[in-house]
Amino acid sequence: MPVTYPAYLHLDRLLDLQHPRSEPAEHDEMLFIVIHQVYELWFKQLLHETDKLRADLGQGDLYGAVSVLKRMRMVMKTLVGQLDILETMTPLSFASFRDRLDTASGFQSSQFRELEFAFGYKRAALARAGSPIPETAALARRLGEPSVVDRLYDFLARRGVPVPDELLHPDPEAPSRPSEAMQEQLLQLYRTQPELVFLFEALLDFDEGIQEWRYRHVKLVERTIGAKQGTGGSGGMEFLKQSLFKPIFADLWAVRHRM
Ligand code: HEM
Image 1 (cartoon, rainbow, N blue to C red):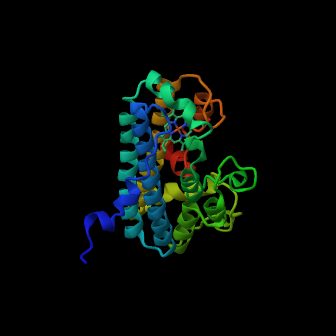
Image 2 (image 1 turned 90 degrees about the horizontal axis):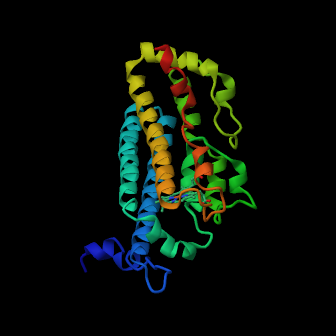
Image 3 (image 1 turned 180 degrees about the vertical axis):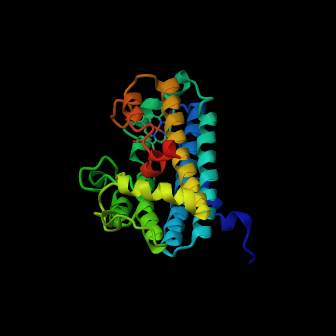
């Protein structure tokens, strides 16, 4: 039997995974489900690419790292663009099925947190007992793994850059922190090593993509539920605003006015 398109993609299972909870069915609930499922698939792809990025940096493969980052940036742009579709749903339409979500919220997306952890924005409490995230096994695994930022420092050290010792041997469960000593090195590298500039700018592109997503998500939340509390139990918009403009590669942002 030749492999067919539906069999290869397991379409029977994939297309049987959308189950609106509203009765009678509210038209927009299907969109709400589909878009979140698509996001989770893209998160899965981003994690897959992130693993390659870390491996490339670990092996000193500059071109591999830059090309994977270029792809991740395009995925990020698609993620941001998809919010436009959800913004065609009015507040009234969302309100018609919102209580059916009960406590469900993107806040509980384990893959989104995995992505944050993999890029160094680690918060150990989210991976432990009592976490608001229902499934923590994958997150707990990521917590102990080196982040992309850690791998970046290893990569630079292998190329002879004097990376401060505490950055080369970090507490694996702690979030990445800015380092003034590292910023001096980066400035130097921007001036003297053009091939590394490609890597730094590609990292910055992805970082900006995540910040763009956070901003567009907050605006989506504002126009759809205004100041209402989140279904995940947070203050909603005000809570989400706290993570706006928080960079992943703080050192790369910190040096720009000095160039
Ligand atoms: C009508 C559409 C949406 C509304 C009203 C909404 C609302 C919210 C609210 C209020 C929060 C804060 C946590 C809480 O629930 O208390 C939140 C968090 C979150 N949402 Fe949405 N959201 C929407 C669409 C989406 C979509 C399409 C995604 C894509 C996966 C998403 C992913 C997330 C993530 C990852 C968080 C956690 C953010 C963080 O803690 O930094 N949301 N959302």
